[in-house]
Image (cartoon, rainbow, N blue to C red):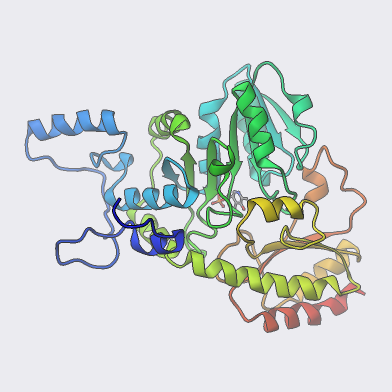
Length: 391
Ligand SMILES: *Cc1c(COP(=O)(O)O)cnc(C)c1O
């Protein structure tokens, strides 16, 4: 490379676009394809050879198209990884990112703070398949004692879903590397801009592109990105299951990712204002957000993250019935799953039900919020008017 390497923010705008040298539009065109046509038999044979060698060829729709390749390249760059495979949802990405690295009879460690449906995947598939699954503490403090001679895979999520517990990933990666264990991480909260697990020693990073990358709550999409060493099994597993996405979805995700680096600081600044305000309120027992100074693990966040997003939780002192009325009376924060879009959302959590190692039973109701791109003044006023239901 002759030019100096551009910053990630610049690369998100400039890369994965149609090549120079012809009259062209700004965005990569949408390619909808199952069949790809060949000029002659020699071209068909050459493509098959190329597919085996490069593990990427525009040869048939399930193997991807120029539109999906453009998105994969963008996400690989965002994650600081070697290569990426995309799939139809964040949950699918997690499943296809984990399966290549553990087999029946082997031991798998999963954090108690994982996105809850991942535990369903464990119960519905991994365990019946014969994998020995064990849950470890969200902060990772008990993990070394749980390693067995047949432990093959550790799954982390940083920060944890709902309560945003922090974990020292570089320290965990040192332990897994020593033992030849694969370390996989759900990176949806940090999404590359804020956090790059592969640069901190993880082998596999999955994310729900549905959230920050798409950014507009209109596409479901997942991505698995790996180091060079972990790439082949992930690629082969995606091919084995015929995992692919539509050109339309890839196009929308590429459009979303262009503005991601400028959206996230707005989500962060708004959330900081809300947390400052909430921490002063007598109805609030705790602010759960890694960028908040009293949050457990805040120091790890400062060391390992480049910023924070708009997903946070508040613990309330009032009982759940009053908290339900508080949620019902919110107007800017609409009730709904998912997050990372431009709009503010609120959702229930199940922290005591999912944290099977750490005791959360003494805590009050915990509500998860996503601070969108609305004016923080309006968001705080909305929370304030609803708080009358908490007394
Ligand atoms: C939403 C989410 C997922 C799953 O993404 P989908 O695209 O909804 O399947 C996985 N992990 C985390 C942390 C999430 O918030």
